[in-house]
Image 1 (tube, one colour):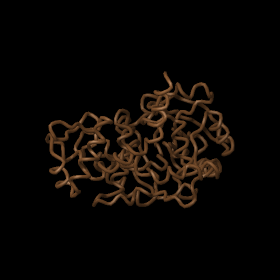
Image 2 (tube, helix red, strand yellow; image 1 turned 180 degrees about the horizontal axis):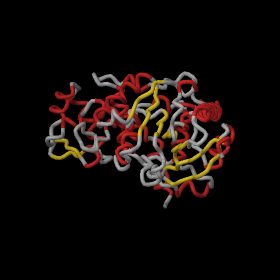
Image 3 (cartoon, helix red, strand yellow; image 1 turned 90 degrees about the vertical axis):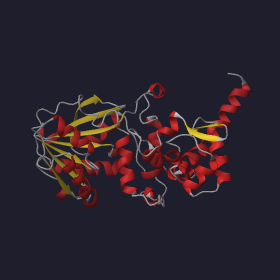
Image 4 (tube, helix red, strand yellow; image 1 turned 135 degrees about the horizontal axis):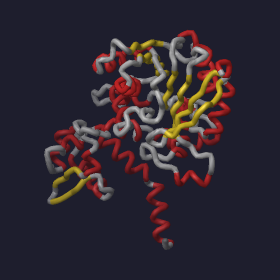
Length: 345
């Protein structure tokens, strides 16, 4: 690669935030929806979106150079990429992009997180609640989480043997999507979704829609209050929860679950696969379009959390009175850490 190409590549990397901001703007304003029926002029698009035609033309024109839109004979149209941003697309990525590209102002403060080795103190953890545009932010968040798993709604299926589990507890299971898929695959299993009160109420609707109300209940609580954690599960599952927390809160969460789960129960933690070898980082399969090393930085920035290696998870388990019994390669670049209580061995 010659010097000029290297220099241009460097500049492209440094200006990536420009395209992210543009993607966020057209997504919020549903401009791809304006184009779902075919090419339109900037004037037509602007009128439908309630925006000035001149600046809309300039923005979409710039985005054509990145393959986001197409411009021909004075009219803009969708490409395969922007088509995914339609609200009615079967695999719509709209909510995911709203979530992923809405934190540019926070990333501009990355240096603070690096210097503190912790999350930025005053960053809003619920930034997505301020999207506006007459949309339900919680619904957008739920849709974004589900869209990450279009190809594998329950990555543990086919990886972990659930046949001996009568009751599965999903700790911080969100809208219940993961648990629902597992229960569908195991008709004799019962489920308990453990979540904060508002999220638990929302999940009840999804569970009812899936026809699983007779086999799955929602329990409201907080994993920092051990007395609220169900004590009658055969297995306790967590998906992408530990990476939101630093080591000490993780130890407390695991300790609280261990204190409540029966001696014969298992704990299943599913997280990103972070290689232990520096040489393997570039070989690691990207999950959700971002490598685990960059997800690690995202967790630091927002929550003071981290992606972890197998060795680091083993240390966490030991600190909580758990023994790591199995490490399984899951779908979508994830790892499942199975553990049991030391007292139950």
